[in-house]
Amino acid sequence: MSTFLELGLKEPINKALTDLGYEKPTVIQEKAIPQIISSKSDLKAFAQTGTGKTAAFSLPILELLDSNSGNVQAIILSPTRELAVQIGNNIKDFCKYLPDVKVTTVYGGSSMEDQIRSLKRGSQIVVGTPGRTVDLIKRRALKLGNVQWLVLDEADEMLNMGFKDELDKVLEATPDTKQTLLFSATFPREVESIARNYMTDPVEITSGQKNQGSDNVSHEYYSVTERTRYPALKRIADLNPDIYAIIFCRTRRETQEVADTLIKDGYSADALHGDLSQGQRDSVMGKFRKKTIQILVATDVAARGLDVTELTHVINHKLPDQIENYTHRSGRTGRAGNKGISIVLVNGKEKGKLRPIEKIIQKKFVEAKVPSGKDICQNQLMSLIDKVVNIEVNESQINEFLPSIYEKLETLNREELIQKFVSLEFNTMLAYYENAKDLNDLSSRDNSRARTENENMTRFFINIGRKDNLNPGKLIGLINEQNIGDKVEIGSIDILDTFSFFEIDKNFEDKTLEAFSSNQPDFDGRSVNIEITKKERSGGGRRGGKKPFAKKEGGGFGRRREGGSSSSSRRSDSGSRGGSSDRRSSDRPDRSSGSGERKSSGGFGRKRRDS
Image 1 (spheres, rainbow, N blue to C red):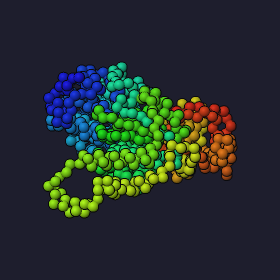
Image 2: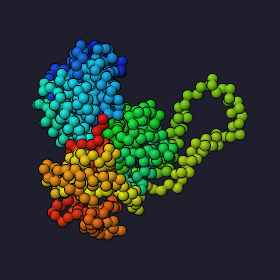
Image 3: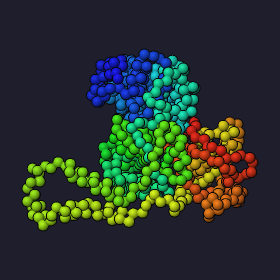
């Protein structure tokens, strides 16, 4: 393996890297840095999360840019505020000994005036989120006419968040002579389309195989019901006394609920999601990096850019809507040569999603059993004993107290002393798990929580489908264009042949109907109509029989109430749900043809911007 100096980087950059503890380049750095320095060809780079992508594209840019010019020479786009801030800070560290190089980071949730002032002072490198970058271009505060490098970092997530229009606007503001560098941890079809549309004969380099998970991460799944999902999560945390983990949820609501419950139950936890202000998010992330918080409960987007190298676990409270995102989640652990475990909690309906993930990461999930109370108590006790054995005794501080202590304990023999010590530390936990149930017994089905989640959503029919070239991302974009509300939550999406279904937070039910009615939108020239649908809940599961169609009530369709699970997703935190549907939909409000078929995932729909 080469050194950074041998890759062609000048001494001031190498000195900064040495100060930061960088010794040898990673595989992606070893391939990307000389390629960018020696060639003006566009570059398409695959690298797993945690392999040093930021240094791979920023170090050669620092090597080549003209520090005597105050023009913006490099624009780096990232999907989230957290990741943009992280990239900006990393580049500032890399140019520690390049005093004339200025870096400005622009993102929503922070003062635009401060960012404009920074740009006016002159910056050769601008790191930004797509929404705020476009806003600054429109204000003519950010001029990209002299840009030599355009970097699209985490390109897959930018598309998942619906930033295609913003990418187009940024590209329009940059010269054709620029070098485009696309970095991504996964390469779904949509990212390949970026390469086709935005790049010219790109060179492709990879670190590992596309979309494959890290070799340092093992993958486990636990079978749960909706009733046992949270208790199983608690037991996994209790089994690992030194856990340092991120728990991933699909929606902001779910994230906050899980975090609140963990905190209530005495765990060192907090939530990270899009409803928090930038100050709150920075505070939470700061505590987590310092390990003041052991467990962070987060949405996919909020956790992007959280650079923590020592995570012991990633726990998927629910699987992501798009299976490619599992690679991003699991890549949060097993970094910097450490081992990590990625855990998935799945109910019976969700197990089918594990197979396509296995194909992507090229690893098998190992089934694990939810730990028993006895297992947990044993692990906790042994962990405490190990700490007692390894504790360093400062005799000078405690010597004066020891005679009194020895006198107090002189009536106790060794066995009694150990018993009392253990009881003092573990009476509560021992009592809690004394008659703990076997959570691996899934014979008693309980869907009460799923039913509650479902009742928070209203299901809509829309008269366009796969034959109209609709996909979930485009549908999300269509919904967002109606300006229903910044906090609207979009739930499950089913794309069928000639029609589709989507769910909206029931608090926005009337606004959704009103928006589509007043705006009279069209999709590729076809007039769009929506109606509320509902499914009647049967009392006997699949054998109970469903009414095939919802009956109109007062000229419209009644509010949907279902018994199945229906996890929803906030527009700024997740995309649409993948999966499959192999039977005729029972809540379609007309009888025109359209057999059920596989649901789509991905797409270019616009979600709430970060500006």
